Image 1 (cartoon, helix red, strand yellow):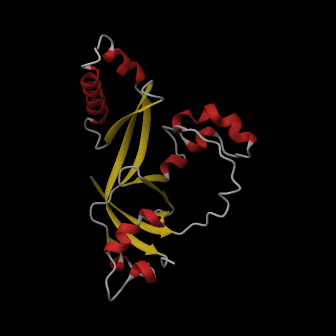
Image 2 (image 1 turned 120 degrees about the vertical axis):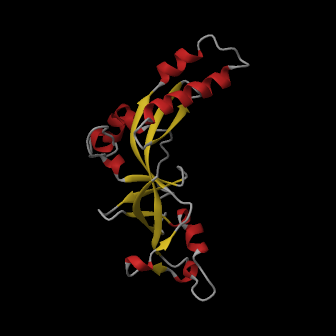
Length: 204
């Protein structure tokens, strides 16, 4: 894993707009965002699909991170590796660094120098490097598979695709299925393991 330090500032965000928001449910995969672009534009979206996701050029995907394997996200907001995330995503780190003498969960915390940053052992951050539709390779490998060995063959082809994609790259890979197993995407991630708590507001 890479050693670049990433710093976490947790935020308490207001959600008063949620009741008025109109539900527009669905899973939008970054590399397929163009298929939803017309609807997004009608709703006031000003960017282009390439601004959101571009494999070879800078795009918003380069500022969005996955914390701890995808359960939480954050945004890079400085060239020093400063990341903003939601308070609940940093809750365990804040709680673990709280003591009876210094209850930062209740009182809040802001590091005034690099030396005051609090390491978060075990937490890692991942940047999405690129995505690739590997449905054809998976489908071809599963041809002729029986019900009893389909799962085993699926794992074999997924593991091999990840090995091939990450060889000598330093990246980590994962393959996820969508639409009830009708489409498969390979994700390549750059992972950073030196993550530190920089700030958190008071719990209340």
